[in-house]
Image 1 (cartoon, rainbow, N blue to C red):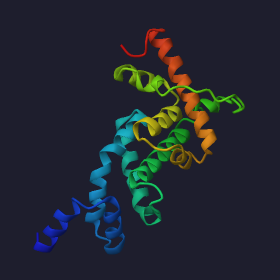
Image 2 (cartoon, rainbow, N blue to C red; image 1 turned 90 degrees about the vertical axis):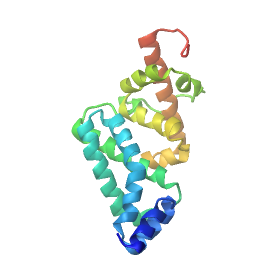
Image 3 (cartoon, one colour; image 1 turned 60 degrees about the horizontal axis):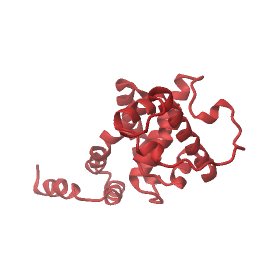
Image 4 (cartoon, helix red, strand yellow; image 1 turned 90 degrees about the horizontal axis):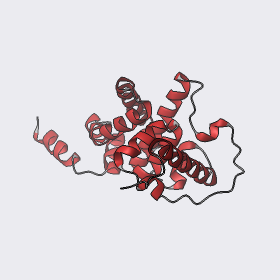
Length: 201
């Protein structure tokens, strides 16, 4: 490896996402995109396997997601963080994949046909956050995949209501309603599985 290449490699390790994107778009040097891939591949794979529940599908989906990221990198506008943009592509890709492969599967609780005219109820975040980790995982696996995704976006990825709305192409009020429904459904599933004992011990 030449001195220049070595300097490039060591420097890229400390560059921000935005700097790596700018350098890749300017130089078309694959090493800059490879650095982004190494930063996010594990996280994208984890989200894919959470959504798809199949390691082989998740591996393929991860590769497809990064192809989409690469092809659309010039369209990244920095209106949100790069990580949020990556996760948006990941969630959308997985939801689309599930819809295509299992046409009748329930994606969101609202897909049952409920009309969003109900009054918004204040369901505390503790409904999710106070569940023991192993119990939360069981509950999340039983949720419709879209509800699991929207709760992951809010509580794991710490995305704003606006960012979630951008991902799912819905208004902020619709997202708030969907989060409310998902929390109610999660609470109901918890009680079905574990009874009405306190959520955390």
